[in-house]
Length: 116
Image 1 (cartoon, rainbow, N blue to C red):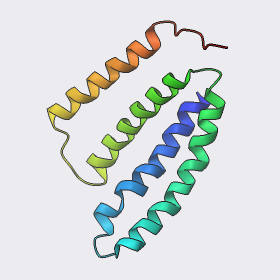
Image 2: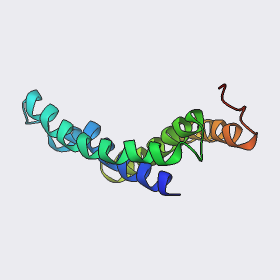
Image 3: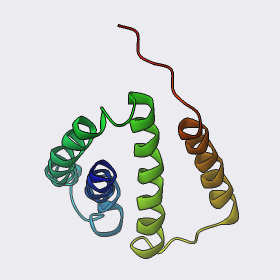
Image 4: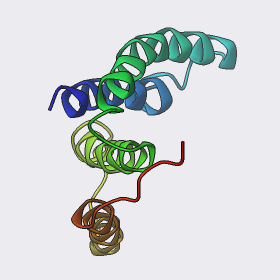
C-alpha cells in the first residue's frame, strides 16, 4: 500500500511538471517552463524511487510498471478534467478500461519466478 500511495503522490507532481505549464505558462519563455518543470519533477523522483524500492519485493518489476501506468492515467484524468477543464470523452474511458484489463491480467495470475 505504501508503494501505491507514494506512486500516486509522485504522479501528482509529475503531472504538474509535464502539463501544468499548459494552463499557466503560455507567457513563459521555454527555458523557464523547462526549469520549473524540472524542479517539480525532482520532487516526483524523490517519491517514485522509494516507491519502487519498497515495492520491488512485494511486486515484480513488470507489476510495478503496470501499477505506475494505471496510477499515471488515473491522476491525469483527474488533472485534465479539473485543472485543464477538458471533457472526458467516451473513447478515453474505453481506452482506460482496456488498460484496467491489462492490470487485471498482470495481477490475476502467478508471475513466473525470476531466473537466478
